[in-house]
Length: 277
Figure (cartoon, rainbow, N blue to C red):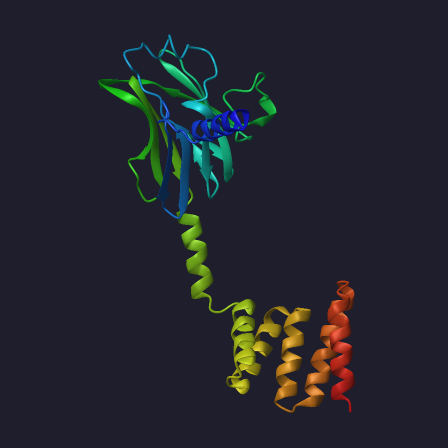
């Protein structure tokens, strides 16, 4: 019995120990910033100075740094941007840096969720590498900081700050061409897909089918697809316009067969058979 009690006591002690949590010396930080029509997010750990000399000592000059602590800093953009004039496709990157006394290398590495720095950096995974001037601060930044600042309509500054150093990195976003394309699209009027979606909704909701058939026929005049022709056939059938419904179903079947969609071929064949009775 004594051995059993001892075993249970040890087991409970182990469970209690497993539940103990303590503050992280370099806590995780996640920031997200909207710039123009895009979103930038950064996940990184924030070490503190704690009376140590940082750059040129704790963080050596001329060596690749994880740009923070623990896991490599993760930089994510929702759209293509340019960084200091270099193109950077949308996606997630490990943000590595090579600090120098006057100039830093900033590396966007096409692999994420890496613990620290790879033993061997693969240059093929460096989507972009840029050089940026480091500047001295007039005050001390105790806890490592990456922020997105000077946010404008189509640009912002990503600032890396620690100790008495700041490294500002210019981010440029393609806002104008995207807005202009959207303006052109909207002012040009509804697209084939817009007419299709409206007609499909009216058909599925049992609304005005006369209006729906006008929309779906407009959609197919602009850009005929087998699934759009199928909807046109169904609407015409509901309206009792069988010959027109068969004609639309035949077109849908032919197009579906050309694109190898057997399901639509079968559905149209069944519809044609039923409408021909």
